[in-house]
Image: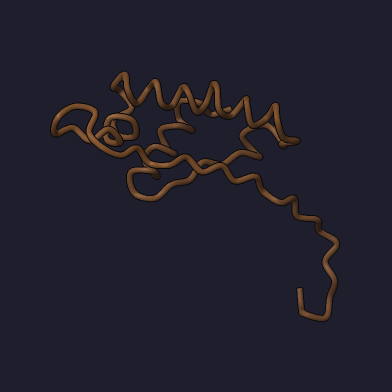
Length: 94
């Protein structure tokens, strides 16, 4: 593909949903975000992942014209958010 050629490929613009990081402590000395995004075996992380996968994603699909299915859905994050994104797609792959 060179600069003088024209592409016939249409790129569908993405819908980007950003979820802010939790701030503060859940308990003295225990960062809330570590509970929600860290170890996916604890009940706090499971509740967070289930909220995103079972409530937030269907809400977005219902309000916007989205392309559904895992081939059209991504989860990304940085650092602990990346771990949360991985845990999300492992727990809710579709």
